[in-house]
Length: 216
Image (cartoon, rainbow, N blue to C red; front, side, top):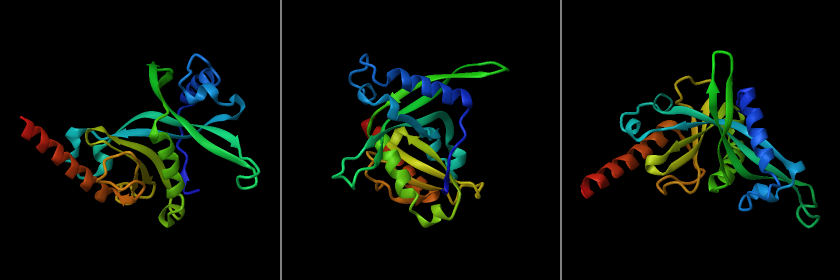
């Protein structure tokens, strides 16, 4: 497929599998969907980095790649469920039920170790999966070669799937699909070039600055 999988450190993969396994079917976490999931049907998928665009970087940003900072690894947690015969004649459905963020716990000159930083079951979990599904249908994605990132811009309440084009070192051909529930100035799942996306984010940042100035 044209969205190529990222290559997380082996130790990070071990850490996320261990963390998820400890919570699947575990009654100590009664509010978690993992507590009622089928242990034999849960697996991790779509390893990708989280990128952060800080408020102080937004207004001066010329290129999104230069302004954003790469952060921790994030994995989707999927549960495979059997459909009933009445639903598409049976078969299997892969449902995203959580997203696990893995952080560095220690680092030496010989090795780096990782641990669970966050296990999230909010709306961005299913939204990430849906954005990937839609992106894979785009002609430019099918014909190109992209790597997926999650872009977080917390100052303006925006989160997006960021597809970085392997063949464009400047990022002009990157695509972004905003994940709901982000700011309504950005239409959910609408593919946008990085320059157009950044222009909307910069406009949102100006409004935030103006609101703070008015309050002051």
